[in-house]
Length: 107
Image (cartoon, rainbow, N blue to C red):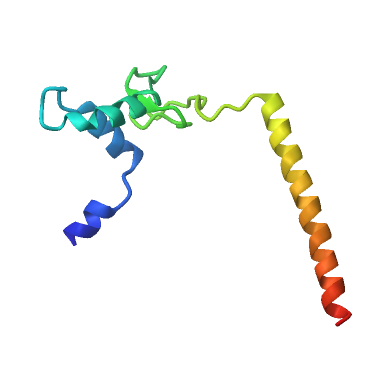
């Protein structure tokens, strides 16, 4: 049972708690430093209560205040390129499927 608990995915609250309780760099747990920097990039204070929270939250887990997510921004030009690439890929896939069906039904 303990193995399942250890292998279970961590919740955002667990990650924040782990970040807050991270040990100093001179401790045996110093290899966590890289992960700390990664998490640190995604933490910011809640505008309502000041507690740290992850950038993709829409509601503060501490005070319940509504916040606008800060993470996962894609500029409009990049988004248009991605959408266009998927449109082209979908069209090519559709044509290939139609040709495949036509070939298989004529056999």
